[in-house]
Length: 205
Image (cartoon, one colour):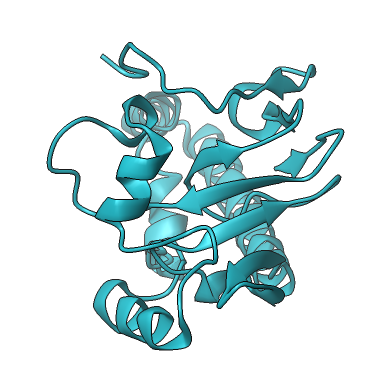
């Protein structure tokens, strides 16, 4: 996800912090800052270390990859393949062994090709995931600092500049005609204008 603001914007990172009342997008900025023990100067180094130990790193939980055997056998558990296997069994029952061998050969070749293709795709995705590790700009102790996006903590003040990567869920606290490219999430090609003022309705029912 990229950002395309005319001027830089700042936002308050609030992911994983327990919400006691209204959602973040319905609260005033001052209330959120007070609730997260943050200020316009950002968090102190001690507060960063405390929140990092309490909430962990800014990373998503990754699902464990399936074993190769499970992936391979998965290509035999489908209705079309089941029909082909049934056809092969009927061919054997009627004495058409050659037809049965051809059908089973097609089934096995399909499973092998599918397994190889899926394994390569997973390897590519894993390699890209290891390569992509964007940085982020935050305000800490009153100074703007570039950090690893994984070290963003609850209460951090994020700075968004033209072309910046949105590294965490956040509540916008200041902006100047900020628009965000959300095509990775929604498929929309036109950047969405973002507002600082609280929203009066729920985003999700």
